[in-house]
Length: 224
Image (cartoon, rainbow, N blue to C red):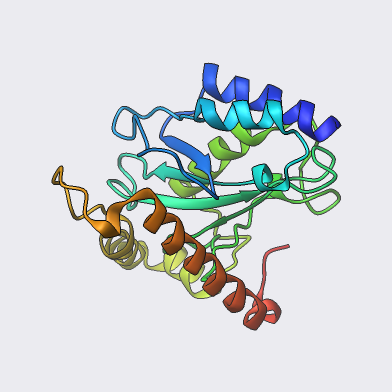
């Protein structure tokens, strides 16, 4: 019950005072195309809020996706990066689980999309506390994209590049952004592949592939 009431407040906060450059939707059943991507607003669909109010015990409402726009003057500029959020049973006493579904070249984000960020971990190793919320986590992730922490990496090779050959790191990060995160089709015609239903299927396939990769790479992690 506490989790549900907390989520209600957070959704209202995200609707009233959103962090810039992000847009969110329910994973199973996205209802329309994302709005305000270019204007830098975050939108939690009113249908999502209504479903949470009417059916607070639905576990389907505890998994949703986010799109974050790469910040200006970063190698991720112009990219749109999809993440998923999974709300745990003990939220807000445990942090949400967040990971990138869009590949990103970053020392603190591994090939399975996991993010090395203190706010996503419990003490004593992490800095999560119940006073934090989804909005502050989104802002922290955006700051991490703009200012990587090479001293606490998930990807040691990228961290080394960032510290000792930054031009190469920037070149590779921009290339990955262009290949994986830039929206290449700017036209107004919605093809079958561009429908919300098919995008949800594609996101689900990404999620399954990343979960498999996460299991394979579990022993490689450096982030403490």
